[in-house]
Length: 271
Image (cartoon, rainbow, N blue to C red):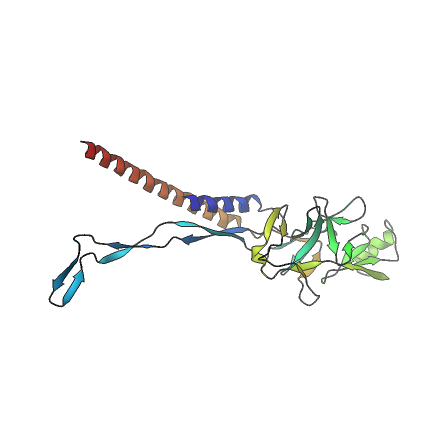
């Protein structure tokens, strides 16, 4: 029953984040306690028969002793990319993480729903700066573009608000663009052991290994104007929730039946 409670917590958390960009679902893994051998206990000792001797308490099967939570791990399967047409939104297609500067140090996220901060820096919705390989990324609205390798280009010819800039962006005829920076996209040796920090952030651990900046050939595609949806299937999670509830109820009835039988045995013994 305790194991099913852990599983229910994971399923409920997945369902509550089904609309959270970049969310990766949790999966509860269990392990069984060692099984016990069951013997038929009629007499003690060994009896003789024409072909030799035999144990009077032969093994008749095994009995389980329950399960416990072994691990609550994150499934980093790719989520669907959804179009937003917001130039500050960035989606990752493949393995990797954006790097974000927080008061607790660098944190990592797949949530590419970004915004332009008051000081002109690219930020998360919580106000934390997104990092490039050279530090925080300072841009202007309608004056930058990001290619599939994560290179950030700014237009050096037009100023903000210039109608010619908008036409140039729509027709893909930018001129005199300059490379501002490259998104700091990282990955880990064992990403399964990253620790969730809330707000779609992860932090590295001793088991996951430190963050390693991916080179251009090995990094995921960066798609501007898209975000990655959660990799949660709400229908499947609802099925899991029903399974958990039924398993919990079945175990609960077993305990109630055992308690009732024990109570009956005590009453009979007293009589």
